[in-house]
Image 1 (spheres, rainbow, N blue to C red):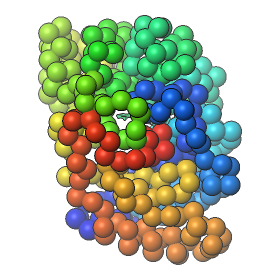
Image 2 (cartoon, protein in one colour):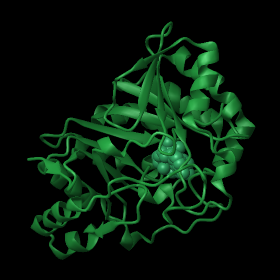
Image 3 (cartoon, rainbow, N blue to C red):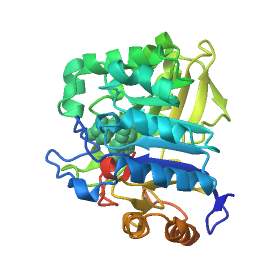
Image 4 (cartoon, rainbow, N blue to C red):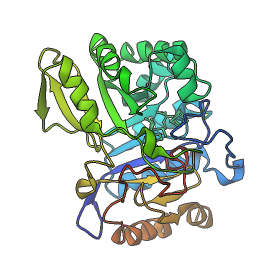
Length: 328
Ligand code: SAM
Ligand code: SF4
């Protein structure tokens, strides 16, 4: 079994959001005041598992659980265990803000989560609090330490770079990753949702980030991929750490897109940067035993998966959904 879209792209990667809620309110991801989904609109753990199984039967080989903050969803470890055990799934991975990892890193490894991406935008406690609007840096650093020693196949840091906020911290963040022998990816901010400011002012192209890293470290281009949109470079003197660049605005990567997303209310998103979606929740609940209607809707929707997003870095809102709703 394999899923192929209307442009011949093979789709084997699902990003599944398990909650739209979060203990942080990052300035690029959420507005200051957010309204979250009422419980009945959110897929249950059983429905999330059923969807995951259905996608794997259709040929999906990699699932990333995300959100919102996946680790604040009650029952998350059990959900991971059940999804990781699905026959045919190659890897279950997760993106987290790290706040709960000191407690959960080991149980997640034991449950079968193979790789962990952790967001870290600053190493300065005040700045960290300002960017996340209420995050505690110490808690996240403890989470990163716990994840580094827990037995994941890989731990990667994710940093959204913004001029005037954390661009000057790029070398320090690279150093932090090198000291722990983990990877770090630098991400360009995307115009998802109205966060109450124009994103253009803070926009920082990946080429600028690369240039400041290259002032301190000798870099080697690499053709490696981790199955996502990052382009990697190696550090000649630090072979354990890779630097990734996720550049939706400046280096469009849609030609090799291999993924779809499902939000926690069960909407299939064919492209992060387009509004198209299909309601799976109604189909799941309307057909509690037979997956046929969902599979049919999935295959039909893939025929119309958009060619690409249109992000440019200019900063105006292009998609009304916040990243926390889409599942980053
Ligand atoms: N809460 C988890 C976290 O922060 O890692 C998982 C969900 S979060 C939406 C997933 C990733 O999306 C994070 O690395 C975050 O930095 C990134 N992100 C959120 N909003 C973004 C935006 N507007 N542009 C680019 N990246 C964004
Ligand atoms: Fe929460 Fe992650 Fe969004 Fe920050 S980026 S508000 S941690 S979901």
